[in-house]
Amino acid sequence: MFDRVYNHQLDAKNRMRIPAKLREELGEHYTITCGVGGCLSVYSESQMAEIKAKLAKIPMFDAEAQKPLRFFLYHCWDAEEDKQGRILLPENLRRYAKLEKDIVIIKSLNCIEIWSAEVWENYIGGGDFDQMAGALNSLM
Image (cartoon, rainbow, N blue to C red; front, side, top):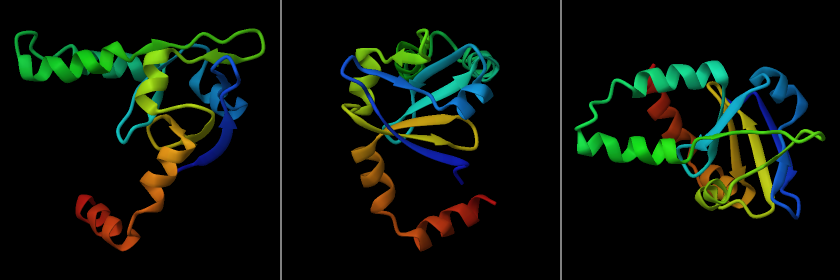
């Protein structure tokens, strides 16, 4: 399911690096936003353009649909790397993903995910694979 997994840390100034192999796949411009399960999702510029095109079809007077749309867009942040290739994660993203120090970066099928190491371990460590496999099987 996951192509690559990397263990990293936020530095004292809440900066991190996206591993070089993953940065190559993302390109020069990429967006970080909230993801499912308590992670951050990182999308390339073209992926984010596709997502926004789909989201633009949500009726603007559908109050029920606008709340999650606004939540998602509020958390969208266009990453800006410094000269050393580090990005500073904004407070709202760090708070959403409970990022404090130890992080796990994962290349999943559709995006890159950034997890708090503790949240990731709780998320993946407590699972019953047989039960999850059944759920996957029903999707295929």
